[in-house]
Image (cartoon, helix red, strand yellow):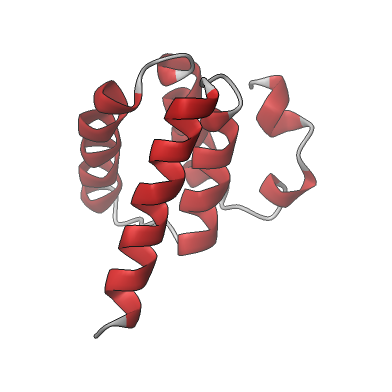
Amino acid sequence: MSQSIKNNPEFSSINPQKLELIDDFVQQNQGKKVQELIPQFIALKSKMVQKGLSFTPAESELMLNVLKQSMTPEEQKRVEQMQNMVHNKKNAF
């Protein structure tokens, strides 16, 4: 398990199956550009659905925060803008 997840107490309460998927995703995608992450994140969500699992908004945010640690400030800003767009879109309905 990656140190950024292992040492984060916020991950301790996550379902072990989800935690394994999150850890695999983070290890495979750390350091990738935002454009590369989007299709990978969609594929992960599909895999989760197949297993009868889903991320809570807090779990998605935790995972993205771990990934942002290896991004440039510009990429971090893009991810934050996307997170805000998704959050605002959900609140509009």
